[in-house]
Structures are given as C-alpha cells and as structure tokens.
Image 1 (tube, rainbow, N blue to C red):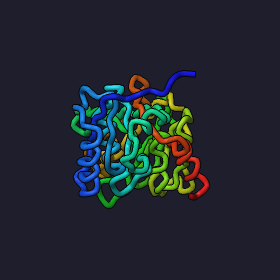
Image 2 (image 1 turned 45 degrees about the vertical axis):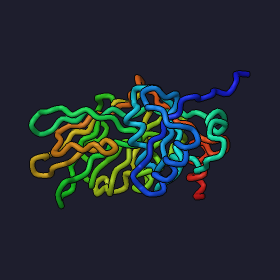
Image 3 (image 1 turned 90 degrees about the horizontal axis):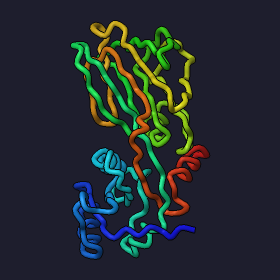
Image 4 (image 1 turned 180 degrees about the vertical axis):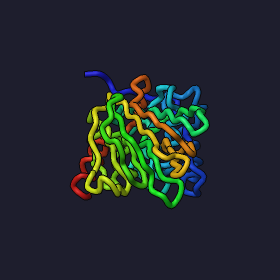
Length: 259
C-alpha cells in the first residue's frame, strides 16, 4: 500500500469576500503561504466560482487543487477548518477532470479558443429563438433545433447549468458528455442526448445574421458566432482533492437522489 502523499509547500488563494479573506489570514499564520509557482498544492478559499477560476489558472500545471468553502455555492468545496490541514490534504481523495475545448468561429470568420470545466453553452442574443444544426463526429444528427440555446456539459458540470435546464446528472467517472437543449421549441419533446466523451460536437448557427447567438465556455464569451466545435481535451488532466466520504462522486450521487 502506498503511503499518503504529503504536501509540504501550500499556496492559498482566496476570493474577495470577508469570510474568505479572514480564512486566508488565519491559515497563512498557521501554515505559511507559498508562491503558487513553487507550491505542491493550491488551497482555494471561497465558493465554486473561485474553484473554477483557480482550476482555469492552473489548467496545465498539474498541481492538485483543494477547496474549502468560504463563499456562496460550495458544491466543489470541502468543509472549512483550520485543524490539521496537512493531515486532511494527505488523506484527501483525488478526482481527475478533463476540460472541454471550445473552438468558436464568429460571423467575421475569426476563431476563438477557450476551455470549460463545467460546460460550453450557446444562447440567443435577442428576443428571437436560435436556429441550430447539430453534428456529432461530423455526421448530421439534427438538421434544425429551434431553442433558446444548447449546452455540452462534463460530468463535473452536469449538476450546474445543465441540471437547471433539466439535463441528466452524470457520475464523475462516467465517460460521457451531456448534450442538453435550453428551452427547446422544436423538436418540442427533445430532451437532449448522452454522448461518449470522445464525441466531436459541432453546432452550426442558422440565420445567424437575423438570429445572433453567443457561445460561452464557463465564463469566456464569444458574441455572434457562426459555428462552435466542442470536444473533451484529454491532453489536460486537472486534479481536484476531496475529503474521504465527501468526494465529488459521492456528492453527485446524492444529487441524483435529491439530497
């Protein structure tokens, strides 16, 4: 049996809220605060927004990220405590997350590339519904979807915006992506699809000059897109740590049973 990993150099990052800043001061006093570039692990103090921001900042570093809840929404965070942090980090369980890669082409032909940890979504920019054509692995699967929009969610993001628009909750280790419409008008009864996480999703905007559509990868927005391509980026593996018994797998399972 391998020994628990010990993290000697800890970097703390915190949101601007009073609770998070107070926690930052206390934990720095107790354990010091290493520069993130030299740290073995990054501890994020805040809510899910800060966790997503921290994951994006360390997208390619391979550093493990451990969150403690000192913000609003804390689905991705562990409980806050100042006691024996090195011991908690050593005992924590690791979940690997692959982000989505979004390649969006705007109406002027410019290409915009962004990563998303939760979801990539398209949404109408005006009062008119979007008209979208959907291709999976370059094969047309839906010639026209009329809706407010559509999203592609990872398992980690399946309990966020995806769940709010009645998409399925995916176990964190499921090799799947959720393709979920947002307020579909036609086909009225279409509720989306489960795709293998190897799928190459292409969404073409029909009548984009008349019915403009924006594309968003987590928090990066591209306006007036004509085509959006989405795939799971297997070249990047992000390491999130959770306390035993409170893993992301366990939280997602609880969500499926409504508690």
